[in-house]
Each structure stands twice: as structure tokens, then as C-alpha cells.
Amino acid sequence: MTRNPGKTSSSTRSNGVVDELIAGLIEQAGGSPHAEFLQEMIHSTLRLIRNQTSRGDVKMLNAALRELIYAFRVFAPYRGIRKVTMFGSARISEDAPEYLQAAAFAREISTRGWMVITGAGEGIMKAGQDGAGRDRSFGVNIRLPFEQAANEVIQNDAKLITFRYFFTRKLVFVKETDAIALFPGGFGTMDEAFETLTLLQTGKSPLLPLVCVDREGGDYWQAWDSYIRGTLLSRGLIAAEDLSLYRVTDRLDEAANELLTFYRNYHSSRYVGNRLVLRLQHVPQPRRSPAWRPSSATSSQRAAFGESGAARRDRGVRPGGFPASDLRLQPPEFRPPAPVDRRPQSPPCGGRPPLTWGERHTAVGSNAGLANSQENVT
Image (cartoon, rainbow, N blue to C red; front, top):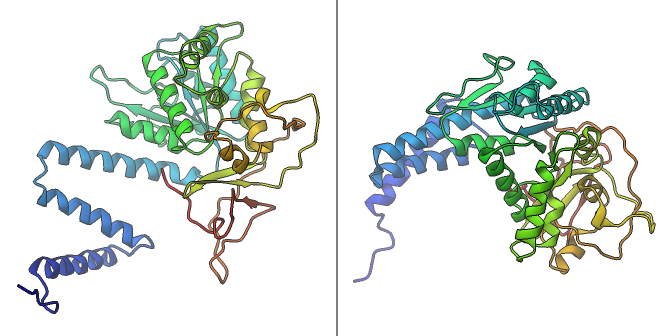
């Protein structure tokens, strides 16, 4: 039987009516420049009816969405300020060297204009907020069966968020930060450390500095690093380049400078298809010197004066990796990071967004149209 192409099915007519109703609802709610995504979200919600999704699953989706919407609203006014997420044990006492080191780190980084994000509990989490102060702290708490109460520094603050689910909480930890600082901890700290490393290794997170900070003379992260090298690397479970994704130190100045110098030139990164695109503050001018090799560089030096992404990809290097090569660069001198201009830009005719204060787009490989592509959201 030949189907009449001019005849419209009932499901198509129904979808058309639903589309009109959804579009009208968005307009009545005030309209949005992101209306197409909101329409898609509402359609996805309506599929729960067609799929006869269980009540438990619907409740989980509802709670997760509500948590993320609230978290985005809390962080929105502070998007232009650099932040560091601090992970570590809740069981460390306030007189322990690890606590004092974490508080000193947060104090130092906050004086440089950064804000601190912690899990809002005791131990290292409280140390971070104790050092940075209430005004420069975010608390990302979690409801547990034994009820983890927020510490006294951040309790009842408008920047305190309490999550029901770990997965929404962990998403916010990484999404809203510009750096990760790991201090000694237990299962939770290891979970957060390896999850962040996996996101960096696979390119599912923007490049950012990750520093493992111990008390002076401590061996917690040295023992962890020995396991990474002696077990994972030696058995071929990770690549040698993956070791460049993190830095281990027991010195406060090294930990702070690892964060501060990373953004001296590096602005952001994204994938366009299978190409890695780096946006820099200015075009780097490497100087040849036998005194310094990329294999011994800090992540900030690699980000600011790194080998081109095209050359790395041609040699099979994963994003974030930086193997030893014949390239020798002079390490940059430390300067305080320049502020990031994140104000919305109105594109001129042609749709290309204007560059801000000396900003450059560095496209890997063929750059036709890459600088104008939308950034990936992971």
C-alpha cells in the first residue's frame, strides 16, 4: 500500500500541538535566549510519561535537577573570580600539621584574589574555610545517614549548598573550579583525586592545575606517587605522560605558585571535532635554553609555554601529557595572574566574537572556522 505523503499522522499532529504549547509556556514565563534547550528539556521530561518511568526514578531526576539549578544560581555572581577546590580528610584535628598547612594555603591563595570551595565539613574542609575566611568560601555539603553538619565557619552562609546526591555534588566541585588542591585524606579524597585525574586524562574536563599538598616533611603523597609509578605506570596501566597531570609538594609556596602561574598565559581550552584548541592571553615567545626541559616543567609552565597541540597529537600524546622532547624552553618568571574578562561580548557583523585585551586564539591544525566554534560543555 502506498502511503499518502500529504496525510499527517496523529502523532505528528500531537507533537506539533505540544511544541506550540511548550513554546507558549516559555514565552509566558518570560522567554529565554536558550529556548531551544528548554524546549528539549521539557520534551525529555514528557518522555518519562511515555516510558512509564518509575516513581523512584522520577524523584531522583527531579531532586538532581533542583540541586543543580540552585547550585548554578549560587555560583553565578562569582563566575569571574578564580576558585580552588580543596579536598582532604574530615578526621584531621585542628592542631595537626596537615590542618595548619591547609589553612595557610587557603589564606595565601585568598590574598591573591582567589576563592575556596570545600565540602563544608570538619578537618581539611574547615581548614580551607578557616584560612580563606567566610566571605571567600563556598561550602558544598552532603546529607549523609549520620548527618555531616556544616562547619561553624560556613554554617548558614548564602554560599553553603547541601546536596542529596554525591554525583551532583562532585559535578559542582569540578565544574565551578579553576584548580584542585588535594590534602591527605581517606576513601573520599582518593575518589575525588582519581576522578579528577580521569577527567583530565580523557579530556572531559578543561585543563587545570592539580597539586597534592602535604605537611612539611610528610610522606603521604610521596607514598601515593610511588604507588602510581611503581604499580600503575610500571604495569602499563597509565602512560608516562599522565604523571604530568599532577604535582606533589610539601611546600606552601610551590603549591600556591602552581595555581597562580598556570593562568599567567593560559586562558581556556576546548575540542573542536578531534582537535584540541588552546586560547592564550598572548602568543608565547619560547627561548632556547639547555637548562630546562618540558619533562621537568610544572603544569603552569607547560600551559604557558607548551609544545603545540598539533605536534603533540601527531606523536600520539594525550591531552595533558607532556613527554620529554628536544624542545627546550626558558621557564617564565612569576607574575601575579591577570584578571579574566568574562563579560559577555556582542559579536560584530560576521558572528566572530571580539578578542579581549591581547587575547589570542591558537587553533590546532587547520584553523578554518575553529576559533568561531562553540565551546564544548562537558
